[in-house]
Structure formats: structure tokens, C-alpha cells
Image 1 (spheres, rainbow, N blue to C red):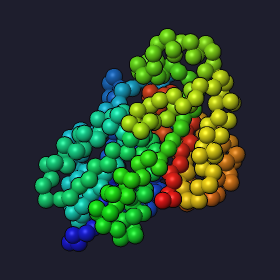
Image 2: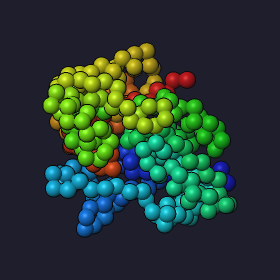
Image 3: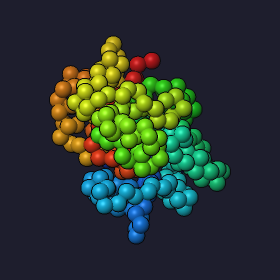
Length: 286
């Protein structure tokens, strides 16, 4: 068994597309989507499309993988011949995944683990797993990869345009009065994660079209002068709009070292509702 083999493990809320999970051999733990009568493992037993399609009937709750599932994930990796595991996960400011997996790792005394709090969500977090996997391919050591990841947390950004405020209001993630007022005024906030990995409002824009325009403007503005980057255009039940944005940003898509697209995890979508658009990038330049 090679002592220096390094595995990458992530969570389903980090939204790494299936083809990249396979290509880079990244392991994934599923979060759980809980309905009144049944629970499903995110992207295993239920698709994002099914969750979004059902939101009018019932807004489910989400929960972390169980300790048993986390243990199983680590045991599987060890059985596959790894002794070192790097685990980038979604923001500790938004989920208990980070502290739970830290606890699970502490039970494995004979393997080396590093859990990375990405301070981000969806592909804003997932970018770091892909980056880690690419560093493994370059034969960097465990400690070198961990150091590079920690240095690159601030290089990952994702911005979201919300179609509606009602789901943030229902989930208690926005003040009721602010939510009602915003809905009346057709406010479409653009949100992101701050340096502590907590949602904040980047801009408040009136109307959907202006909101999408502003989203593109923010990302293109930040990418000016950046030579090497990953790019994502993701969505929650808004494929058509995502496709149009991809067309509008074609020059940036074509230049990206890696371009990733797809549905946002339902674990994020149940709090934000259908019609969510996300554009994110990861700056690879040092």
C-alpha cells in the first residue's frame, strides 16, 4: 500500500459535477433531504429537479450525513488503499458538516486527515475539491496541498441572483418585514458568502433582468486581468436562463481552465427557491 496516496472527499452541497467527481476520483458524502414522510440522500435517492419540482407542495428540511455515513465514507476510502484524506466541505457558518466530519475523523487514529472549511457553498466550495484533486495529480505532498488550499479559500467566489424572497423568509434567513417589503418592490437581491462563510447581500436590484445583468457585471468585473480560473454558471430550476447567460459570457467560458455547470444542490435550493442563478469563479493565479 502506498503511504503517500491522497484521497479527496467532499459533500454533495459542494456541487462538484458528476463527470468531475469521476475524472478526478473525488469521493462524496450526501446530505439528507427530509420530507414529512421520507428522507432521501441528496443526488443519490433524489435529484435536484425532483426537489425543485415539488417545492410548491412541500419545502423539505435538510440535514447532515449521519455519523455512521461519515464513518462509512472514510472506511471505504481506507479500504481503497488510502492513508491520507483531504476533506474540503461547505462553510461552517452555514452548516454543521465541518464540525461533524472533524469529529468523525478523530476516530481514525492511523490515517492522516485534514478538513478544510471552505467558507463557501455550492461550487464556491466545490472548486477547492477540484483544485485539491488537480494538486494530487501534480504529486504535491499532503501538507503542501493543505497549505495551498488554505491560502486559496479567499480566491473562490460565487454570487447568486434570487427569483423570490419567499423561501428565505420561510426559512427564517431574512427578516419578515424586509422580505415582504422586498417582494412588494420587486427586489431581487444578489447574495454571496462573506469571509466568515455567512450569506450577505451584495446588491439589491429591482427586477429580474437587471439582477441578472448586475450578476454578470460583478463576475466579469472581477475576472478582468485574471489569466487562469475555473468558472461556473449554475442554477436552481432555471436551465433556460443559465443557457442564455452561458452564451452571453462565452468569451469567459471559453477561456476558463475548467467550466462547470448544472443544478444547485437541493440542500441550498430549499432555502432559496426555484429560479436561482449562480455565477462563480476560482482564481488560480498566485
